[in-house]
View 1 (cartoon, helix red, strand yellow):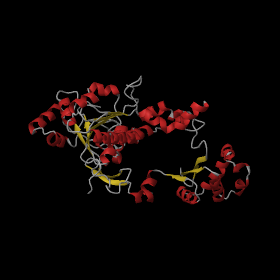
View 2: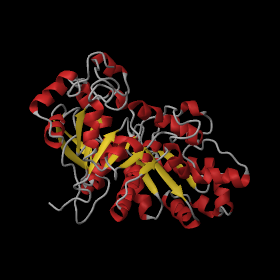
View 3: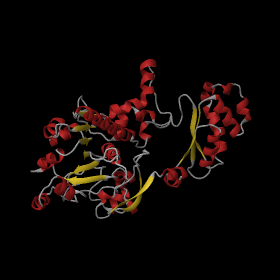
View 4: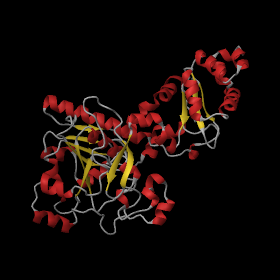
Length: 432
């Protein structure tokens, strides 16, 4: 197999929930040895699930993203069975050390000394309590690269604020733009765009820092405030306010400059999204849905008029889509040059011939989960094929490899670390 782009580099992850682990998954896909540094005495909810000791009653009452497990049963170690964590835990390693316990920092520093990058996305004060800073890392490894991804950056009034993706979405204003015109933001469901955006941008920032180090020999501190990273995704709304004094509210599935909506299709809860940007697409749509009267309406030949009469037009489109399958509508209108997409559920996605042809979902095995399909690397390289080389990493799975092989501790020292609680494959009693 060809040598992977980041093969030979070692990345340490002190990451939580989604943004940080997702960043690490990109680097692991590219061949870096990514080692999650975890603790038997600390459990961060929504990272490896909702709780370290899930009961059946808890699983039955929790949403899938926090409490879901294969077969909807907890198993002996539910923290190794969390779908949200396992979806980005491929190709990684995990070791445990309690950084605040005696000897913990010495173990960690020994690992830093043989590593290239540290990635973290904790609140600023959390890292300060652990005594981990770029300066402290640089004392151990002069050319180390540190990526910090606190929600709001490590300076300013919000530096220590706790936040999940849903809170960042609110702070940057995305929550105000979502939903329908006749509802308020309290009706919105959870969206975590900021996590995905930070994970991808964080990995890019690490690659840039590695390139800089290769040219100069210098490591550096990279800081990515997750909220600041999301603002450009909403650029048109901020520019409209700055230039025109307008603030925007929810628009449902509509578009400010195009005829667009989500339309009902045949069957229960089946939908398709259609967008008409220009006159050519409008004419093609009218022909497709056999609406010669709309095509002949002089007023509707102008895009601005179509926007003001969207309700009327939407009713006509819906009459046509209600009799058809979403995929049928998508293929028919795409042939005519009209941007259209079937709204798929999970079963549709797994069965979709395009997704199958691309090999996006890949089989992977993990001892506590068995074999399942997982999302694979999101990009393909012609000369260095990427894939899932190792299934979702289990808690503390690589302790012996890290302590004995990488750090060269003796068998007696390793046993002492086990007795002290640094080394383990379970969370300590009482942690929850």
